[in-house]
Amino acid sequence: MSGSEEKIVRPSTEHEDKEALHSHSGLGSEDAATRTPLAFVIDPIAEKKLLRKLDWILLPLFGLIYATNFVDRTAIGNAKIAGLEADLGMAGFDYNIALTIFYIFYIVADVPSNLALKHFGSVWLAAMVTLFGIISIGTAFVQSYSGLIATRVFLGIVEGGTLSGLTYIVSRYYRRSEFVMRVGLFFGISTPLAGAFGGLLASGLLSLEDFGQIKSWRKIFFFEGIITTGIGLICFVIIPTDPQNTRMLNDEERALALARIEADQVVRMQGRKEPTTLKLVWRAFNLNTTFCLLGYIIVNISFQGLALFLPTVVATLGHFTVVESQLRTVPPYIVSMVWAVSICWVSFRFKIRSLPIMVSFFFMITGYAMAVATKNPHARYAACFLSLLGSTPIGPLELAWGTDNAAPDTIRAVTSAIIPGFGAIGSVIAVWTYLPADAPDYHKGNTLNLSFGSAGVVLNFLAMAYILQENAKRERGERDYRLEGKSTKELEELGYLHPRFRYQL
Image (cartoon, rainbow, N blue to C red; front, side, top):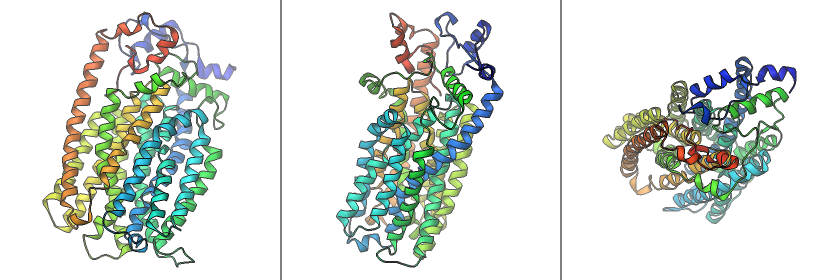
């Protein structure tokens, strides 16, 4: 290590080890003799500088990537009211079936995609982004319903691992205490911003003159696909995977980035990753992950339903042109983006995930209660704001909460895939919540979302009770038996099962 590196990351003293062991947010209060020494002390000024650099590089990039993912996925909602169904001879439940097929393949692809990312690195994610841009372009040329179904299958496969992959990479650069704010920023901002931008872009593209086969709704898929493909090609050069070998950091910054993550672990890995084994993959399917997954499924029913059907719902609230309906979807997304950033900041500032989720569920419930109770178009439009505002931050918070409480690295990678991947089950349900027969009030769909929102509150209480109970048991030493007779390798693989590990509430 160079002289300048020693100032940034230097060996710790015995006194500093003891102090850190009693103050670390992820550790309990067991006897210091049972703990692994910190082995280094990090210069706080250098750390703040690195954190700013990471924020300015990673978050805008990841936000842009996920925004393109979301825009390409939900473009079909904007295309629907621009003549997609009539041109392809669709009727009845054809539209809902096309949406369902996408999410089935999205779910299947998610975990394998994240394991491939862990193995191949950032080139895997860049390839996926490029491919879903190309598939979007191809959708502009489909001439039949079967052609649309084929593009939805391929789009589901390549989009499946995007969110989980980005979340996994973020977890490789940020401490547990920093993680939720970063996921909230790139996920919580990019999703509503993409929803708002998608509506604006669709209205703008529909105003352009037709050329060749590219007419009406086909312009939405064609131009959005070109933008995404260009971003994907750039990603081959600029997406970082791991702080150990990224080109965006110099040697000193890489050493500091690794030291920060090491300092957050209950067992020091010294930059190594544990091998991916079936045992570790299976352990990612634990009770804490299950709570977060179920919460993600519930909110996905609401959020994805709104994302796919908001243009349709808004169109029933007045006598609007297609472009006017698209533009009226923008304000709810903007308001929900502001709320998502604010509530994620509160979660970060006070180091708590459960209460911000609870508050957001109450907003979501209020919105759907209004939609069920009234037929007034102004009140129903206000209900769209509250429902979207409440549901937008819950997904990022549930994902951050689950990944926060996952260790070691393999379990973190799988957990960050399980939650959004299997969470897409909620999206499958969502595509059947707003059916043509239920128009224009969509009473059944709104009642269903109201019920699921109430179930989300109960689920959140259960998750809080479990975490409080489990952390208390570890404080009392009731999980210390897990350390008995363990080799160094086995201790490294304990992760969230380690008696010193504390779940974030």
